[in-house]
Image 1 (tube, rainbow, N blue to C red):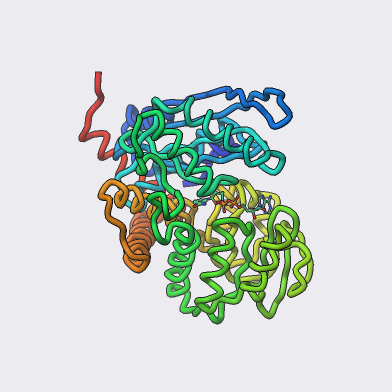
Image 2: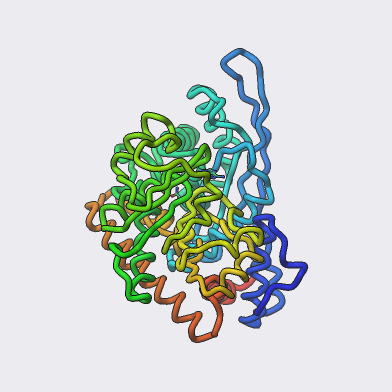
Length: 421
Ligand code: NAD
């Protein structure tokens, strides 16, 4: 089942493709379907001219990759970062297809991004970038086609601007055109917490397998944005001991457990966790290797590599971020018996509640927060059990099991639909 030397590449697309290849070999996937499913349906590249506050014009590169619409409209986030590349977006789009299939919701996969540094942009510049990016990809998105959502450095406000731009073009308000919107604009209750909550739900299931309780479980979290901070808050409230938290600028460690409500307040004021008085200063990379029971990377990709995987002490890895672990690191972790809850399962809470948001917008009828949370739990527990049982049945690790399950489901839909000529 191992990776070949050629597959041990580290780019996001290549990591995805390496895993896809291993899973496809295990499934003995038909050669035609293999070719079809390995590459995206459509890749859009746009160059967006934007008038800056000082009157000059800048041109930003943007991407939208639609990997698959086999099981429904494509779905996936939009990220703003100076590091965005087409390769990364292509890999993440495919992972969205597998993620939606793992949790068995009727979407395909997509991803988008704009190469920009939001820390250096004013609110007006951010709005103009968002509106022009949306206008450039407008013919390819929409509730029945491709539904964008937030990702790194994009949140409710960016989604509100995207929804408004789409709506102005089609001449009526289409709330289901994007998800992750503010509650007052057709957002769903529970969406903000959904990815972090989903991480906790699957972590709870893993603890049951190890006969552990939240109270006896030390957790280290990398990333204190949407996913990391919500996971920290919910896990803290559920009794977990959060011993380390890091963000881009630094981290904090306290073996007795961090007071998460105090850290949330501090990080809000200080714009980060660095310097928090309730813990010792620690670097983000040190925290990954610190002794703990659960490690929850919730920041960015490729942070666990062949260079540090052998020093990871956690027994359970909950991948809140997308692609935090490279294929060579996978092998090291699995050899060492780390129970990995792969990204396409662990962080699927976000897209699951995005699906709920899309359903509610289309119905024009909104659910209570309890309804949302109960349905999310039902879906994530079922997906956790599906993946773990699939792995046990086929004698593969959780990552490959999740890929196999997803590829099998997408392949089945493609076979039923046939190939349009
Ligand atoms: P965010 O922008 O809200 O937060 C990112 C956090 O990570 C910030 O605290 C930032 O300081 C920190 N960070 C960035 N690079 C870092 C580094 N090298 N070391 C340490 N910390 C670093 O983003 P988010 O929405 O929380 O997304 C985080 C990850 O989760 C991404 O991989 C994203 O694709 C994935 N994800 C997000 C959602 C969602 O609903 N937001 C859903 C599924 C997956």
